[in-house]
Amino acid sequence: MGSDFSGNERHTPVMAEEVTEFLTINPDGVYIDGTIGGGGHAEVILDRLTDKALYIGIDKDATAIDYCKERFKDSTAKVELFQGNFSMMYEIAERMSVKGVDGVLLDLGVSSTQIDLPERGFSFSSDGPLDMRMDQDSGINAADLIKSLTERELADLIYEYGEERHSRKIASAIVNFQKESQLRTTSDLSSIVKRVIMGNMKTKSLARVFQALRIAVNDELSSLEEGLSAAIKLLKKGGRIVVLSYHSLEDRIVKNRLRDLSKSHIEDPESPTGYRDQVKELKLLTKKVIKPTGSEIERNPRSRSARLRAAEKL
Image (cartoon, rainbow, N blue to C red; front, side, top):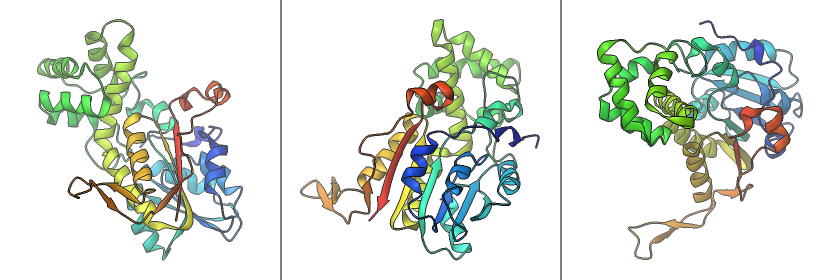
């Protein structure tokens, strides 16, 4: 497929110390890394685990799995790797006869390796096919997705998933371009957005448009909802979930889900009182979201947008 995670070996994982502190409560435990990527967080976490521990790594990208198989073949803890969506972690755990886990890590979004490879089509800074699929062996790519949408549908997608206020103008320009030519590359899309957006907002609008398409291509928000449910179901009492998100849509979903499950009563419009009682499932470990330090952002500018939330199963 042309992708290569080997360059990720020295890549510093985002908020590695904070992630590890929250997650690794039991050195002999069972952990799931739902987005193992190049194994940056995995390496730091595995350093704290014993030979009794089990570390299950999942990733949609087959090249990430191949790379991590080699990278962690001599790990002290047992490492099991699976290609797939982290929303399927419950089924994967069942297949391994794992009844409960001590921790789940979800590092959301696209990996630095995927961004840096032009042929993956995630970046507007380099030219490549307009693909954006995490799993290049399945699903519809970004170019074909755009072709399948009406102008209104495309505008709504860019607005909803990219929170881009110029979505209608951008969608119209894309549709007009497609009347004359085929939209095939990241450069094609970038040039359209740059022509439509004036002044110093071009880069932010480009980021939002590319984000919107990537989320849609990979069905990221639905996967996140399902993955959170699976993770919480799998956690043992005292087990922990740690989530790193990189944009407001993801963070809002994580924040609301963890907060709602940490309450003994929640809003219910159908109830006479407006609330209904429920059994609290989680204790919040992060009352406020945790952000990277200034020094980390300086070392790794891509960490700037990261937001960490964590909770413990009751």
